[in-house]
Length: 378
Image (tube, rainbow, N blue to C red; front, side, top):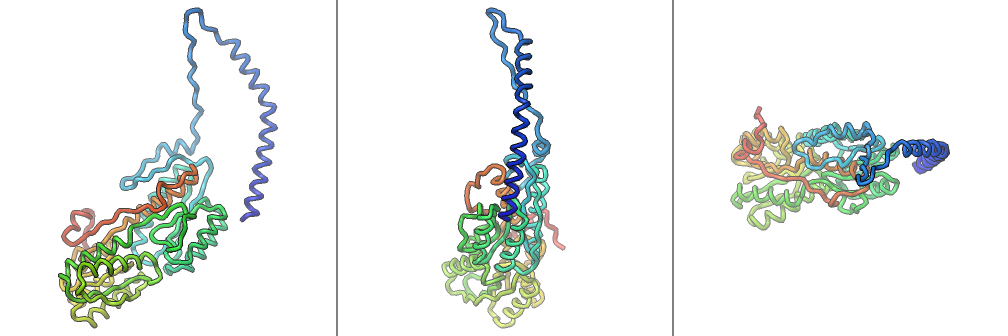
């Protein structure tokens, strides 16, 4: 990569040298033209004020013209500052192991269409279903070879910070979203995501209210190595200990963001613990737990508390198996992370904060119609 940049620098220097030699011959013609213009310009008569000439603006570039036509879509707050003078590319990484990523891709599609008018291409990179540190590290290393203006990614595990730091040191701007290493420094320009600890506390409040402080609570997480999932679990545990100290809180079960694994884990919990009152899901696939509650005939007796307003989850909010779902605005995660990289690339100015938080809210069976009016139950 360094050789490529060095060669590019030599080529730019050669072009500049050629341009400067051309400018030398052009200056004489320009001077003559100015002299002729001065001769034909009438001097103001005595007692009359001199006429002010208005500078004529040159024609706007094609990129600037297209950018002027682009409108900021509803729901998004961060706008592009200006069009890029040169075409640039931003790589956007995501996984595809549960419906949450469909909402990420919806935001990605919106920002891709918007920035097309600003001389920027956003390239989607599907990293598959294995959401671990090695996967993201391998992709960062590979994508860096393309020398993009920026990379946007969800690192999620400790150890990934070394690969991000290396990409930044090689001249690639990086923004992270959803979750990142606890050791991540400010080499990346920003992190975009929800407050996972606060989300866990919200889930704990819902659990305490539903159980009345009695019974057993099961926990199904995605990955014990994924920081966002662990922060949600910690926020939940700490708040629940404060609100309902008499509740029995079980050790977490990993389900790897899989609805099928979540279903199986939920069935095991329901079978093993007769006094089970709530299943708390920190990660993807909670509708698997909701289906298990329904299949076991426990609707109204056992409630699922989870994250994300994806249609698969909202379906079970409507029928009562999911008693509370916390949102994290994934569309804006995609939008704000890409926009932060773009604006930094064209202006050199970093975002106002290194941590940009997305909005979070709670939906219940009683508030579904109000908070998600467009949702139609199957």
